[in-house]
Length: 334
Length: 289
Image (cartoon, rainbow over all chains, first blue to last red; front, side):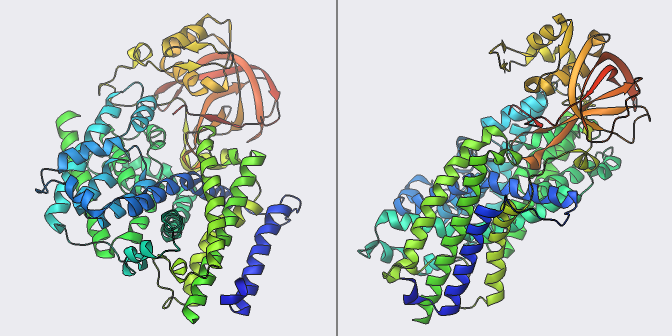
């Protein structure tokens, strides 16, 4: 089969690559490498691989959900569910995002597919910013990490909901419902052609879509993870301590930290708690809401699906909204 | 025709990458080495990923040889016709990177080398400096209704029960399952525990901010994967002429006392007996959420 469509050097390349992988699988444990890799680089590689391994199942969940929507949910169904007035839907959708307890790796491909199927842009964005925080697992882990101040967990949920609504509103204000998605080959070749093609069954199409989408977003995910693991390894968090006292600067500092560390929303509360003795409560909350909404890994993934200009505008809107809301919250409650 | 060949090549290459990911995750799961990367509670999700990888890899390779033209077109996001050799080469190396690192890099355990960048914690949130915010640290034990499950199936319904259990024991052995809670209880209720005999295990970390004779008996705690690891520990001093070395694993028994670090009272273990031990099979402690 192979020879039919592939030239000789490509066939050689494939054989070599396959050989290297199988050899690595069998032999790597028995061969001692004698050059010393510095410990920090080993740490960086381990952190990198751990994020990839951790994200993989959730990426597949997102990719499959997206492929299922692509294959089985029609544009009409979506149209019927969305109220005519774009603003009416904002609050119900923000609450609905709490019913999807998924992290950013899984939600982005799903939302992109829903938008493709006709869901308004601002409602999709509400899912992206809301669902990674508004879920029971994140609440429980935050509650546990800040046991002596359960207010943190409640405030995190409250702020995430408020921000999801505010951000949805602002996205609607600035972008209406202009298409901000990149086109991909799939849409270019009308997918209805695929389904009618007699030899390609729906299940097969679903598998193809899933695997294409995995590679589509995988490259961005891996690139983002490389950056995140380098920051994790080489960025000295103790530097931040001197900036922790200032109420105006500290939230920005912690938002920056949430951005570069790219932690899962279920795990970031413990990292936040290690800053509890040096940083103000407001800035810890800034870290806890901003990180899951926007970090290196997820914003690079957004570039996979959305137009560059939109992603930049989106990042600015989220950053300003979180900062403003945190300052207000600090002023009112802390 | 040329275009079709290219699609076929890309699809086959992707199939091989999927096989690579499958072999890697399968091997890590089989040997248990996956615990060097992710917490046990997340491992079932990996089994799902392993299954998906195998199915997708098989389908992808079968697809690359398909005569059905429609099967070949893909939604790769980058345009095959215009992307240069270098571009696709770079993108594919991104996918090979985790596979090769996973196979060839030695298993690495997070130790004192990460403390320098992450700092060390003596309790969970020992001193949130605005405790008035919805909080009352003295009431915490009664309020938190989190269950604690012991290996011997003893269930502590909440912190208070765990604390009472600890207080009633003539000698407190700090167990891995309750490591963080125990440390946190010591910090929050230090006065009740002063003078108690304690046995604790961990690796030695010499914190530059502490007094020269003090060191920290520490553990790396993980919530989901090692990327979120943080370091927890108990300050210790010893009169016994036993020079401790950074990163060596010890089991220490001693009396809990009080020390002051940057204006904060923290527990300090006055070591009476110290024993050098092997690094435990599972060097990490896990955060229950």
